[in-house]
Amino acid sequence: MKQDYLWDKTGNDAEIERLEGLLSGFRYMDEAPNGSNVVEFPTRSKRSLKPLIFSMAACLAVGAVAIGIWNLSSITGEPTPLHVVHETEAGPKPELAVPVTPATREEPTLVLSKQAPVMMAKKNKPSLKQKYTAAANKGDSVDKPRLTKEEKYAYGQLMLALSITSSKWQVVQDSINGVEDGRTNDR
Amino acid sequence: MRKLINFSFKGALIVFGALAVVNVSAQDARIQFDLLKGMETTARDVVEVDLDGKLLDLAKRVTIKVKNDDARKVGEAISGLKGIYVRVYRFENENEYNMSVVDQLRSQLTSPGWERLANVRSKRNNQKVDVFTMFTGDVMSGVAVVISESKSVAVINVIGPIDIETLVELSGRLNIPKIDIDIDHKTTKKPGTEEE
Image 1 (cartoon, chains in turn purple, cyan):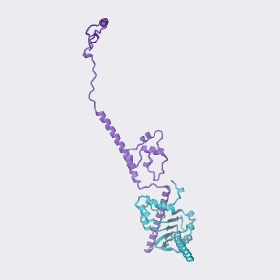
Image 2 (spheres, rainbow over the protein chains, first blue to last red):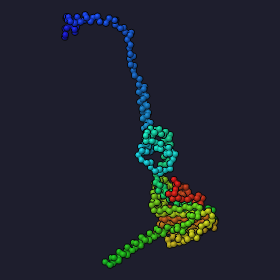
Image 3 (cartoon, rainbow over the protein chains, first blue to last red):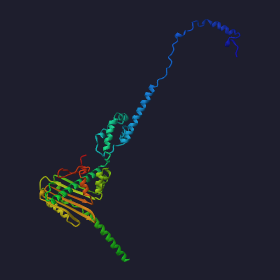
Image 4 (cartoon, rainbow over the protein chains, first blue to last red):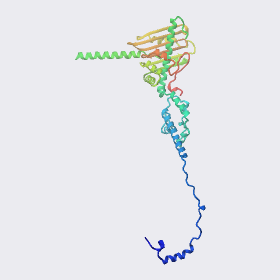
């Protein structure tokens, strides 16, 4: 342990003592500050968990709604607005084989621009009611297959021919029955 | 060797003959509508349908594609159908067409193979109804219906077996409404001229 004057004022050191004497005139002379002037910062109280819980609940709600909409889209087969955007950019719209219903006419594909596709898609996002209506309309057209123009023409011609055939066959039967009954055919 | 050649030749002749008979039978059920040419210009309402070959196959495929009980029954009723040809002409005034033309068409159906199934004559509207059938063996290979009245002519030619009773039962329940050409005056148009 050091035993010099500078360390614990033991012993003698003339040079240090002389310097102390010279500097003593600059010693701080005021009283020590009392405790009332001391500004105490408020101690940090126990943090509330409410905002955290609210934010977590909001995140969960948003996530649940997003998953619900995604599931609804996958069940009904109706493309989500985002999918529609990609389909629109990917290539030309396929030929419509089924009659265009008002529900399909409201598809956002017609108004989407390439500049801000996602924003536009979100803007045109249909409500759940619209989605259910569209799903119901789709249910009506489940049995309607996608037919080409040629298929539709051929089927129409066949049905026309068969309708006339059955109608005329009925005329034949009525005529025969009319003759058998001994009365003229009123048809 | 000569016997073998002779036998082969006779065999080939028999096979060729049989094929020719089948082919002729299939073709004989087709009525020539050329006689009716010109009627479409004077008639008020015209329906002309010629459905056979690939177009008929396409239509048959649609009856399977359409998931509908009635369409399925129609598909079954026409499964053996090889062709269907329809001509319906309705005129504005009575006796506006040449009745002898229709009689000539009827005479086609007196050729061998055809059998008259029904023959009805009525003075009311000068109605003449004829039904002819053609059989190849036990299988019906053709049906012809000729109905002429004072203001209309209808000729229907069906090639191949068809279950008409089922079609009559289904009429009005098909995908297109029941057509009674005597009430509704429908006309057909080719795909190119159709209004989309």
